[in-house]
Image 1: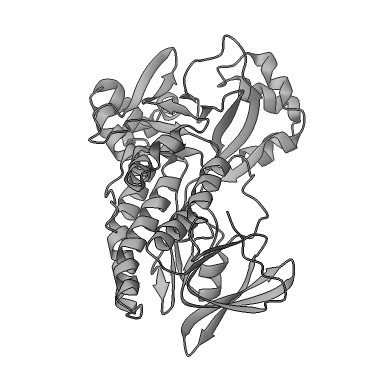
Image 2 (image 1 turned 30 degrees about the vertical axis):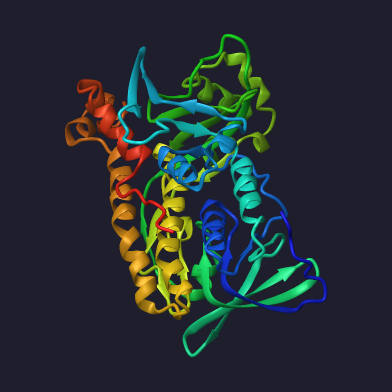
Length: 410
């Protein structure tokens, strides 16, 4: 991958500048570059090596990679495959999502470190001369004139840099600088949940598949990362702050209540630094764009970790954005507000439907809420699947493909 030499260059021009080198930003950069659009992706970090990110590549994303012609090369990267997702309720193992009926070629979720996915996409995009990737370049401000955005300012190791562009795309995550600087209004939905991410070693005799383990008012998720487990401990909001006052051993004891691994394995949690806190947020922008700028992915809509759909929804946003922009830019026409509104309109329904589903999946029915014992059990959707196992295929479709699957048009 080629990074153009930016030494002594204080200002550049590009057609589309994308803030954020995550899944949405890198995928959009690749799709625009292959359509001969001059595109610059900027990433505030120096590399992609950040653990405990969304590491699920769903069937919808695998189909995009299939369309791009890279699937064999992609699946040659180290990964594990889940053709079903399971939960352990008490002593009963329940299949909560089954991908075997999906109308696609790749009927599984691929668990792959996100840095490997991003490096792969960046490598493919870097084969195009009209693609530029700037690392270690955080956004400091937007360029705006008369209410229209026409670029942005970044800080680079060589000093400040101004990037003029026909369109700025904010793909810089749930703490987006772009949406903040653009003054885009956020609608928030309260979800009192936190996820504590931990790494535990993988040893002989451990479970052989990725599954979620439900417990009283909490859950535990195992993700097979080859030689170790990436573990997600789902708890009520505020739990981590409370348990820290009781000490690390008390925390290990609480994790042991729901962790399927041997209790002694938890001794690998040696300090609070070994438990990384993610506060679950579900929100979305009331309007994703203003003249000259649009947000996609987590910058437009933060998702719950439920189903691991955030990464793949972001990639679907990128595909839809490219499908709108490519014919506009190929014709030489300027990008208008109508074009940006069309992108939001296309992705608004799957965003709202997914968030509504995630909120429902966390909820209890009224009868369960009134019963203290049942209120501590699994959510209503898990109980429904336990009663009607065929619902696992519906869940597999919603998790694997989403509400509106995008396909490449160009």
